[in-house]
Structures are given as structure tokens and as C-alpha cells.
Image (cartoon, rainbow, N blue to C red):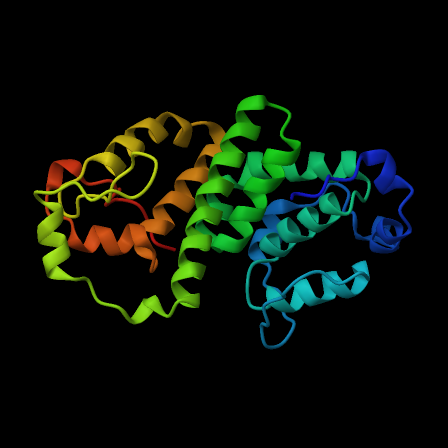
Length: 251
């Protein structure tokens, strides 16, 4: 059973939440020079990816600085804003700064952020976007990425990452419907138009501002990293039903 999400009122009176916000005001940057940040490189030694959350905000942000060592300071600024928003540190100001950052630097952020932080950005739009369409597209991007993450996690847990495609099953799919559940059936490898049609439906949303660019970037990355999308792409041979953008960058 899914537990109930705490209300804003409950979070306000939560000692744990106050501990997570302690000292947060000094991390809010007023009127940051985004162009200067973009050109500066974070120098914090060897980069180490963070995992989970630390209750001490100072420590958590110090860990983030280490994670972004060697990268543009603008990417660290973006991650810092997301942390401040999630911990509700001067929320109105932090959200305004997040919106301004994406308004001015969407292309740079999508080109340079990894999937982890693109998903976090999508989640932030889904939670706090002022436009209902932005919230919906943010949720689409987050759901797409996390669904793939769950599928690939299941594949790893079952040791299936070492398995090769079975030619006899691929051949069977060309002539037979292979049921899955609830009326769905296995994707017809090599020719199926399901994902091409999904791409067409997504295209209008790709063009919807910064959050649309996040959705497109996440979608494009799924086609080139080791995911079910990319593995099916490698087996696809009907050009007119392809579902990927050959002009999309991979970085």
C-alpha cells in the first residue's frame, strides 16, 4: 500500500524537515551570473557520484560539489537549486531561480546534464510547474525514464543482461501473435510501428519549451544507451517504422 504524502502543514512542523533545511539561506544565490557560471569549472578533486540524501544540507551540497568536479559550475548550480526546492528552502525564490535557469540555459543543460539530473529536473517541473502542460510533460519525461530504469533493473536482477536474442522467437513474431497480458502482445521485432506512432504523438510535446526539450533529450538518450529501446532498434530493419531521431546528439 502506498503511504500518504505528508502535507505542507505537516512538513512545516516536522523536526526532521527543519534539520534538512538548517543553514539553507546561505546557499541561495541572488541574481546569479549564469553566463559566468557556465564558463567556470568546479574544482573539487576526483568526481564521486552521490547516492541518497544526507540530512545535513551543508554536507549534502559539499558532496554534490564533489560529484560535479570537472564540470561546469552551472550544472552544480542546477543541482543545488533542486536540493533547495526539495527541502523547501526559500521555496519561492528557489523555484523562480530554477525557472529562470531553464528559461535561459535549456539547451546547455540538456546537452550537458546526465540522465539522473534530467530526471530530477523533470520531477521538479512535475511538482512545481506553474503551467499545467509543463507539469504534465515533466511527469511524462519522469515516467518514461523511470519505467525504463525499472525494466533495466529487473533485467540486471535476473541476470538477463548476458542473454542474446533468440532467432527462432524473432522469426515466430513475424507470423504469430504472442500474448503478454490484458490483451497486449509482444512487440514484432524488426517491423512494428508501435514506437514510431508513439514518437509521432510525442513530437508536439518535444517542442513545448524547456520541459519539452527535457522530454526529447531523455527520449533520445534512451535510444543510444543500453536499454530495451536501443536493443530493439539494433534488430529493426523497416525504415519507415523507425522511432528514433538520427540527427539527435548522444551527449
